Length: 274
Image (cartoon, rainbow, N blue to C red; front, side, top):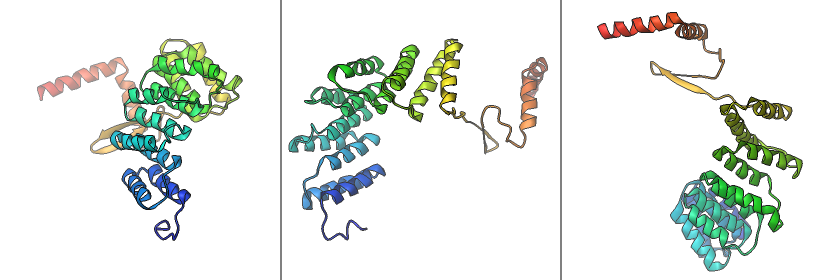
C-alpha cells in the first residue's frame, strides 16, 4: 500500500486514508488507522473525526461513535461545524435522537449544516412537526436552507401526509431560493403525489406530473417478483418482455371474468376431492 510505504505522513495523508476506509464502509480499518495516528502521527483533525462519525452512523455503530465524541470533547473540536453536524447525524442514524437533539441544542454557533442534520434526523424518525418547526426558524437566524435542507423538510411533509405544505416548500425552493430539484427532491415529491392520489385530488396529481415532465423527470417503475418452480421472474406494470406474456395476460383476463370465477370454483372443488 502507498500509505504504508510513505517515508513521511502528514495530516492530509492520515485524514485521507481514514476517509477512504470510512467511505468504503470499512469501520474497523478506519478506527485502526485512528489508533495508529494517535500513537505515531499528528493530532487528528476535524476531517478525520467527521469521517469516523460518518461510518459510525451509516453502520449504526453507536458505541464507537460515542468514543469518537468523547475524544473530540477532550481536544475541543466538538464545536467545529463539520464535527458538530457529523455528531448529530451519527446519533440520529444510530437511533439516539435524544442525544442528537442534545448535541444540536448545545451548539454555540449557527450553521446550516448542523441545522440540516437535525432536520433530517427528525424527518427520518417520523418527527415531522419538529423538523418543520426547525425549518421555519431558519430565516429568523440569518441562514439559508440548501438543497439538502429541503430534502429533509420534504421528507417530513411526506411522512406526515402534509401534501399542501410539501408542495409549498417545493415551490419555495425553486422560486425563492433558486435551487434546481434533484432526484432526491422528486423522490419525496412523487410520494406527495401518491398521497394526493390516495385522497382523490387528481388535479394536484396532474399538476405535479406536469411539472416533473417539464423537468425531464421520469418515475422509475416498481418491480415485482414471483418464484415459480424455483425460478425467479421479475416484471413491471404493462411488461410484455416475458416469453409467456401472452398466456399470462390471457389467464389474468380469464380470472377477471365470470368464467374465471367458475374456473376457480371448479379448481377448488377438484382440490377438495383429491
